[in-house]
Amino acid sequence: MKILRELLIIFSICLVAQFISELLPIPFPASVLSLVILLLLLLSKMFKPHWIQNLSGFLLKNMAFFFIPAGVCIIEQYTALKGNILTLLLICLVTTFLTFTASAYAVIGTIKLMEKVRSRHNG
Image (cartoon, rainbow, N blue to C red; front, side, top):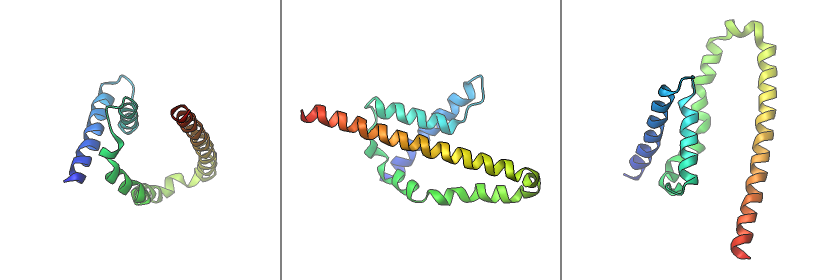
C-alpha cells in the first residue's frame, strides 16, 4: 500500500504540472514543472521527503533503464542524424561538461549551506 500512496503523490504532482503547462502561454515541459512544484513543496515544509522515499529510491537505482527508449529512438533516426553527427557530439560534450560543472557547484553550495545550518543549531 505504501508504494501505491507514493505513486499517487508523484503522479498527482505530475498531473498538476501537466495542467499548469497547458495553461501557460509558452510551451514549457510539464516534467520540469513537476520538479519545481516538488521543490517548492519540500521548501515550504508542507511535504515530507519520507512520503516518497521508497519509490524515489527505486527510480534512482533503476534510472539507466529509463534511457533505453531514448537510445532506441536515436538509433532509429540514424539516417537523419548522419550528416550532423559531429555537431551532435560537440553539443553532447559541451552540455555534459556544463552539467557536471553545475552539479559540482550545486553540491559544494549544498554542503556549505548544510554546514552553516549545523553550526547555527550546534552553536
